[in-house]
Image 1: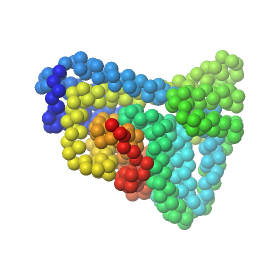
Image 2: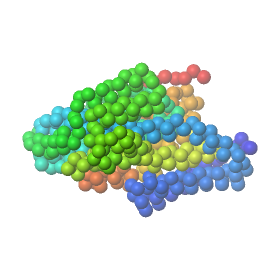
Image 3: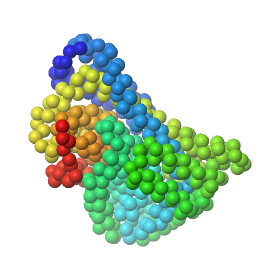
Image 4: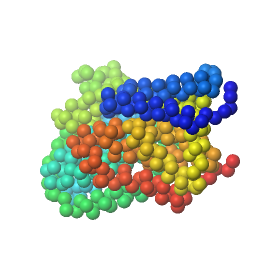
Length: 477
């Protein structure tokens, strides 16, 4: 095996190939490219990387096989966490935890403060569901309808919805992007979330202040559609504050720094028990039976954990909001992570990542320039690859060694990656996020872009906090 580092022009070829195939996948499949097209693109990039290394630099296949095994071993716990996230999402919904929080959450909305309320509600729902896409496609669409009745600008409303949804997506332990950013950089999930507080909360406070001021002249009769949601939830679920014991106890476990996998599994079990006590009729509906026997309830809990659930409330948008996909819903993300890790392993084994990072290090002169470079690369990858998941993985692969060499903790990289790659994806018209949200809301990307204040502020806040040096530590080698 040669120790020679590939020339940067050679090292960039697999990345260019990856971007090219991702462009084809997005053109052919649009937002469905995550269902296989992006994975094929990653494997093609890996194949080109390995082929070049074996033919030009005479590396053996064993070198790549060894690195792939090592990398997959490192993400094995992450894959288990993703399965538990799917289980948690299902049990929290069917047990009534999320419906109870939505029930009370929508009632805090005041017509005079519609924009800030919309932002806060979407943030709450997104934190609980772990999905900005689901939040925008459900409660976001309903809020946009209310804004039309009130005569509030759809661009402002879409900006408030997206800002809140992406705040929740970043800060939720259920979010696949949050899990991906932490795992790709080798950072503990809850360590990553706690560290994001220092950039995310200031960005969100500025955002809701802007919406608060902008919404003072809002209209006055939003109660009707809110009532449809609360009535639908109350008729279908046993809305009870007792369900909130589950998130409270989960919060206690997180505060005590219990490992992520244990927290997620324990919380799912607690929610399953609550479902058996408070929502047996929902479990019977999930199981497809009208008899609340032990076998039926057991089947209902099992399906909630691993499969898709659909509960009929009589309201189509509400039905979409409370539907879940369980562990099966995580399989595309797991598939993507496996392929992404294989691509990353090939780039590491071939030392092509070293070649690219050496080029970057030549102009990194300070902590601020390093973070600014990471932010710029994340945005650039969102523009060129058209997918936030790929951007997160590539950003982590490119900078992981750079941060280590410069003596910075991995949590700084994971936070900066989220501040750039996760939140800006929805601002790019040809990115899967931008395409999806503009289609779902019926508002073009360039129309809502100026009003997505959280998404616009976050990358700058990341650089500002780096310049200040707040809570940023150097690692002693």
